[in-house]
Image (tube, rainbow, N blue to C red):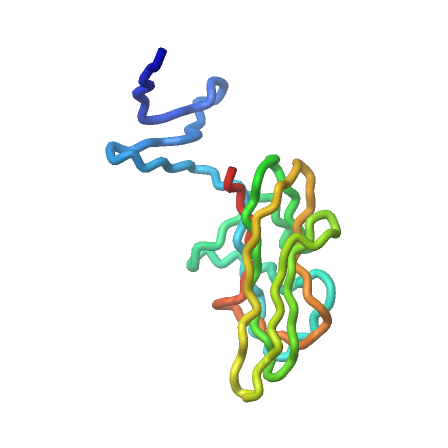
Length: 166
């Protein structure tokens, strides 16, 4: 037996907090997004980065960055609050002719990354960017990492992100 549920807003029973709204065209909006997008805090053309990329600590709300409160801008670690499938990735540039590699670690294990061999023209930059999906459990730790090479990070187009997709 089929049924039709006609509602515009779904709220939790305890606090009447809106969890989801549906407009007359069928578009669904959720007031709380699980995840983050965070930018680089410095414009640095010669950072020698190894391990966790600690420059991803700038919440730039003017360009759509967001943080559900679980990304620690001091440690640059995201603690997964809700189990599910997450899309994650990061974006950085090679510095002149340097080989660079960026990747995301989940609990110390690489879940995806990309590398760029630099350019033969020292005044140009090549981009190392990627995205992947990974299944996360509550409490998993996500971090962006680098391979000990020179990067070009800038405050406008260098970023790290993860968000729940289902």
